[in-house]
Length: 482
Image (cartoon, rainbow, N blue to C red; front, side, top):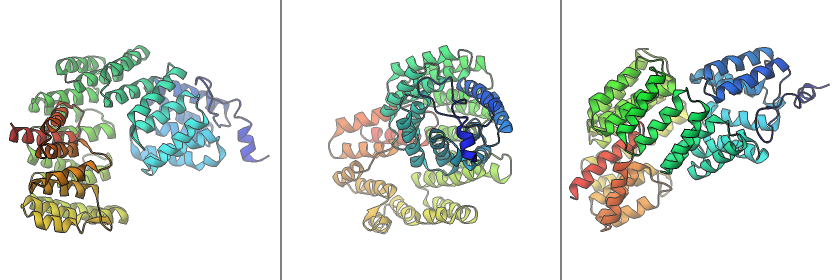
């Protein structure tokens, strides 16, 4: 009897019995491993990730080839090195699992192992088609729609609702449903989702933290601050609450108070993801205060913490994005000389520490930054000449170069062509929208342009550098057009 046949004889026994609707078969040789897996899954659903991880790892002690348990353990850890290690174990046994497990594991490995979000999206899409009446498959495809692939929040809402209908106790679906509604500015629906989430896990700080963020996004800062304080009553060490309080104080222009709350985070046991956001929150605070130089200093401190080995969290991430963001801020501030120096350091880091393809990709940005420098020096003719050499394909500029070209045209008063360039972008982020609004005002569409500018000013998000830059730009445009 072959190994695969032995595995498949156990599928009927070890299904995920608690999942409503269709079952995704779970492949394991061990009844005890299956029991640990079931307990871990229940704990993970109520956000007891540390306890869940311990049980998933017990399951793989009982059955080292239990691929899905390896993958689920990976998704309970914050340390990305551990996550990749567990995913690699899961991938060893991919040929021996059911098709549903294969798609689930391959999807997670595509993104967290290889950074391929489109591949993750496609695998989760196939999983949902294979198990359309399974709560987990619908939740996962909703997640893919919200975070990866097409980034479609309306579709995400549809699949999260399907998941909840199939399993009203799937707590994680309520939180994701809330944020999908928030992106669509459907605030009452977001509140309804979180109120249901609170009923499922009333003593956990996470749903209250999400509730507080709803109020922040609505601009109801007093209510948001009160809700974050409720979170800290439940867990005085809950880092996201301090970051949420900091965001509120930034939007209230109480910048020093915001940064005091972010410094509290530095004393807590932060996950890698939280640690990133602590730095981003500080950068955002300085941008909102219009202190770009201090934001750049913060990014350099972030990098130096890696060099000095003060922390070991995702060192490549902090170095790469520390350089990338500092370069951007310096050029946006008109500091071309320091911007080019920072770019050269970034390039050296990529050459010494990253893949050749990454170095080559960053090297291709040189003409873009040279054009940006010429634009900062108000030599628009030279900037356009350089941009025309900066192409991914013959005659095709990168998105960043197209936006810069639109900015140059605006500076020259050629606002109609600038509008056409921005309107032709596949999608505009919030900072690009601020330039489009400025272009609309220049072409005489003042009402439409000002409406878009005011919408950007009203936007509230947690630690969004693009939004902080956009809001500063909007203030300048509004002041110039009073």
